[in-house]
Length: 269
Ligand code: FE
Ligand code: FE
Ligand code: ZN
Image (tube, rainbow, N blue to C red; front, side):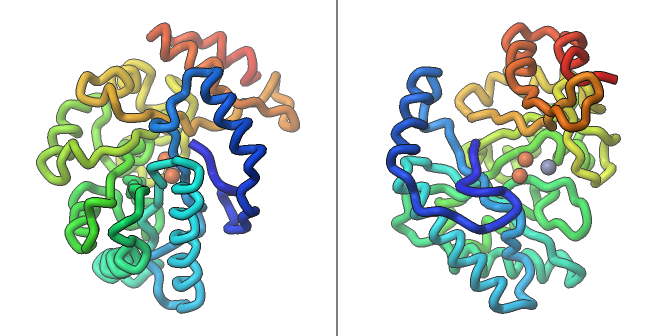
């Protein structure tokens, strides 16, 4: 997964063919299929809030451009946070998201928009399958919509990841497994139902290593791309030296064995 610019803002450069070719070469070298590469839309895009017309119009036009960028790059999925209703209530939020997606999606686009399940922090819409289903049902070309399940968000929203078969069963009954486009694999710093949305490294949070391994290797999810969004770790308590944990986490995932030392070595105290 990557962002087409900084995740926190909407400044975007024109596509650079040289960089794209280098990225394709690197993916080939590391056996990463473009089919499994997704783009995440910036966090500040909020289709649920229509109080400021110019912000809303900007969000719609940004997403249209993001779809074009992805088509040019050969990327088939964009992850989108459905949005926050900012106090106007879940029904207003969901209606705005539906209208927004209807403004954004064109029937000929080659890119799917994956609505991410949210933790329910603040006034976030889409923290349970029913809300996502309402959004999907309201969108005209909803064959262009998929869902991204985020394990930290599900857990924080109240779902029990230790009974993931049941979570998937509920997802299948309400939305349908064929609509599952992507998984975000994160542990959570907080307890189930906390509505906090603070990601933890694999095995270092309240979901736990074994439960995440069950999700990653679930037989129904073999073909669904899985992405780590775990926090960077500090080296020996040096706040200025932080490292991506992915190399170590992927090793543990491949070996299906939790190794405290791997993370301790770089995490410090
Ligand atoms: Fe996200
Ligand atoms: Fe996520
Ligand atoms: Zn999150």
